[in-house]
Length: 284
Image (spheres, rainbow, N blue to C red):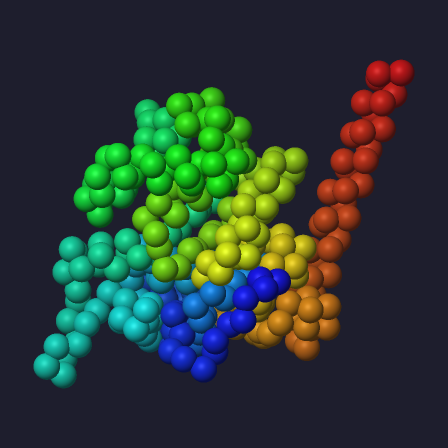
């Protein structure tokens, strides 16, 4: 759990009120209320299809709200009030709002024709009009922070999945966001590469970075998050400190989900052990 004291008396950095999202007749989110304060790390857990990723995409305006409101940094997302009426924000204003938020996806989405350094420099110079020299200096600092200072001139195809994801994190941080969103950032990685990405995320948490993380990594949620939110079927089923939700959940839906995750982890561990034993026999 991040060591800094979270001030929950002031206005939250992220505030969602009765958030609804439908795709046609399919209601994916059915009235989400959630607050995240500056410096807080919140992990969203839940089965596939529970609406976790959709919620992140609404915060970052990659989807539009069907109903409800979201505020980030005190500003309504996607809309604004003028003379008592609500208006859709201009594309330029939406881009400005989005630039305050960093997002890291399941897939790394790096530009394949650019080096690691160029991937990181691109947005600050184009969106924020940062000078090339300043953006390059910051990119080198961020590459060092994520342990990739020796990979600055490498292209994505020359990097492992874990290295690509760390570059993606550095790229998001280059915009100096107020909020970082992570959408299952380790789900596309081989098991041995997961730890290197979670280590960087843990470092960000310890430095007071505000983070909302969709994840199935229960150990990360338990050790790093300030709060865990369990979602299912488009609603928040329960939320609270990680030890409470993960070790003593109040709701049956949460208990069923955690039991299933535990069984999957145990099965995966058994398969890994069998693979090791087979390889040892072949070596022998």
